[in-house]
Image 1 (cartoon, helix red, strand yellow):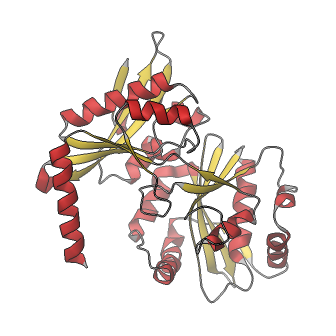
Image 2: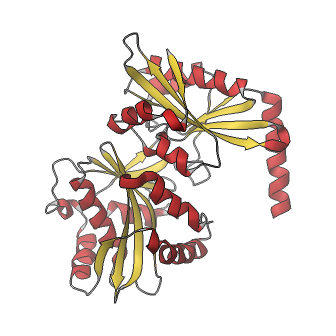
Image 3: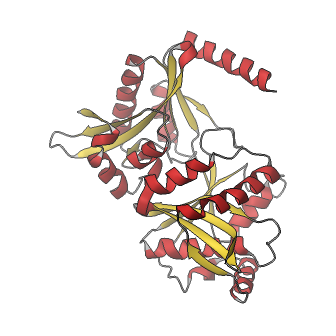
Length: 342
């Protein structure tokens, strides 16, 4: 039985997501409250005894001019590994919901690796088309790095780092740099540094109030880490933790204050905090392409490898077209708008 829930009555969904080994913060109502400009709907699949077997959080990316919407489940749905009956039931229910609400497409991108042949067969049977782009053009990065923290303590954590990374962290410990957990009042300085990073790397930055809403919406599940010298933040990161997983979500630094290696220090501090929270996994999130030294983007791979993280390549972004004619109209409209902006 599939049950639909709103942001106001999502307690059961959140409890399921937060306790599930495959849970993800983007599949909780917390993320729905942060992304409040995109209507949110939750789906729960229960068995005959009322036990929840799977969940999916859907966001509506509305296109008012065409009276349609893309329905997207970031890093969803959530279900037990290998339980493709539950997965198929959730996709089918989401498909019908989206069609009833003028949706032209359903999109998902669960954390299932690209070598899972059974999953590929199931999605093909459902009529889903997979986009396996290896750059940052997808809604969520397909290529990531993840560290397994099981068996590690805060004292032994650095033992599985590369020696160069350990050296940089040790050097940072012998400076007058300090680390503290920030609050919303620190967001303006955090945002200044984010703008520096965005300009240097040529990518857009969310508005400042997005980061304020992020800390509010995720509450105890999000921490703003600050590295400071002379009481001035020189680097910062935002970490999210839920269930047994923590994520490095955002990072920035003053480009004139990198000699003391604040970025490496903050990564280490976040992982130490993840161990305190009881997390098994630390997710460094996205990179571009495979870990091949010939890859022009290999530098970011090497940086994350320095923390003992392992490369993960996920199945990709899966689309189920609901109205082909409308979907074509949307693609044409998006191309026209892109040409106008260029």
